[in-house]
Image 1 (tube, helix red, strand yellow):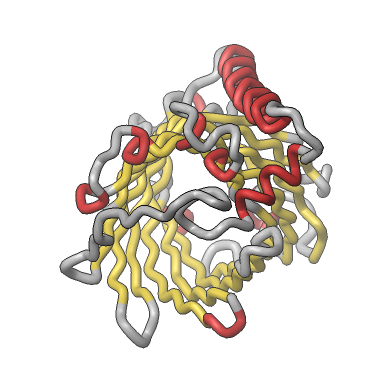
Image 2 (cartoon, one colour):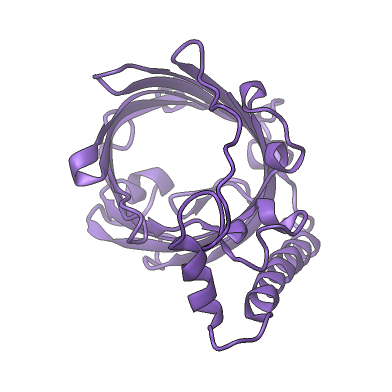
Length: 318
């Protein structure tokens, strides 16, 4: 894990250093922040004073259907502050493999309907559950409805998730929950979201998340808008507060069921738009490669530990 952590930290640090150095280059009285905002304040098509050139006609999907697939390789599987890929006396990190597949149908007036399935495969599963000969630890099925309230710059999402644990037997093999989420995105604030999950089976509790995040496209910086590789990179810092309402104690099998602050998750995603870099036409979909680092700070020390983890993912969407 040390080798992975060091490598991921160096990559993220180099990208941040490049962005800072380029943003402050160029001289003049305008600060780096002012230069960035000056670009954001221009009209689409170029910098102030530049002639606007008509581009190719925008491609539109022939059908209102989207689908996506993504593969993630991560050092640890952390879910709501709990490490589900760590066993006693683990000397060498066993990587966790995750695969997600989803599809959405977009209506004109009633929002978006979607379904998804997610698989999690852990290399050290036999050390966690010696009685099982499978490395497939979890499979999730979800269905949801999403609707954007444009007047409020808010997106509402209602959904249901089924969790299946193939390595377990009996009632513990399955649980499910519903959730509701509100996301504000008016382009002026840090994209706040509030989500509540309510388990209906094994855990009989609720988990609430309050988060903020914001995308910083390096192409918005004048010094980087034409720089190869850098122009297709987006930095996304995030922070999420987890609030436990009688879910955590049932999940880990110890502690008292109560309502308490559980963890604070800090994150940094560095995404590279492969399709844009290679000028792949939009009708063929988009390919994105992302590196990420996260730190989960335990606020409920009796039940959780601090966790630092990272990984890489590659995704395709159409």
